[in-house]
Image (cartoon, rainbow over all chains, first blue to last red; front, side):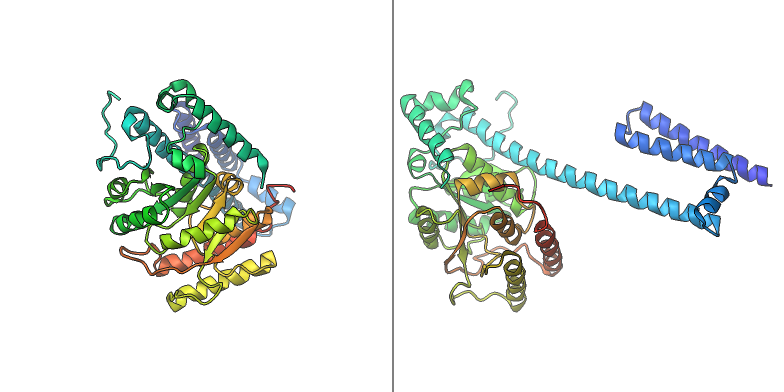
Length: 136
Length: 277
């Protein structure tokens, strides 16, 4: 029974590892995240192969009930991961804002260059939005 | 006043006077040098930045009013991804229009305006909200306050002395709380920290173009400006209720606003100063 359970756990861990490697191969996972997930899948594999690893680790730290260490570890990892994504999102949002501003200003520049008569800001321009003809 | 940017502009103007303006704007070699779009404005160096999100209903009247009160000023409308005819109305009202590709928030819109102003050599930028709350007749007061060089930022304040302003109780309470927090952090009182009716000199524009809060930027930016040694002054102005359209501030947004700005102000105050003086 125990061997069946362990076999299943190892198989699942191997599958996760293969999935991570596949994602990296297909470039669906960028460098910084690939390391993170690769390490995660290896830790899972280790825990599946060596059933008593978590017991020894718990005894070493002084945790009475080993599974709680597993729970604590996964919650902590999830927390750090979520925090990391928040930071990454904030940075992307800032860059996104900058890009939007630059795009808008560049669009105005192009509009002015392609429509010389409107170079004076005080002259009312046509009410149509900037044309998106590829010839310009 | 910091003499450096002013000196830059003077030499720029000289260059422009020597060269034919038409060629100047269109030659690809000159793209690095910002083109000066209007000679009048280049002399006065004044630009009015109007952030607008779905303000087609208010813009025509506002732009007409600005042109009649400040005929020498250039106006740039920052269309913050509006779904209505904001861009078209602004264009037909004689403004230069910067169309943001999607809605990025008022802070980012104002910042886009400041970038535009900096790159085109303007010396003074006035922010006038697109909802018509800020009467164009009061712009001169802000300019006067900046012009004597005694401050870097002039804020049009509703509360400096009793004025006509009557916002909702909740809004006034919120403003009072921000004022209190700002006073505690800065050791001085700014009566109207949420006012978006402001004038910036070039140094302040440069500072804010680099770092300006995303949304609800006003109270937070006062803290960062003051902490970095900028002189912020308040000018008593009258404001009007919205002329049309809808305010972007609803109940849920107000709560978010309160929390976000509180965190931003208090945590921001622990940040090291970015300008060492």
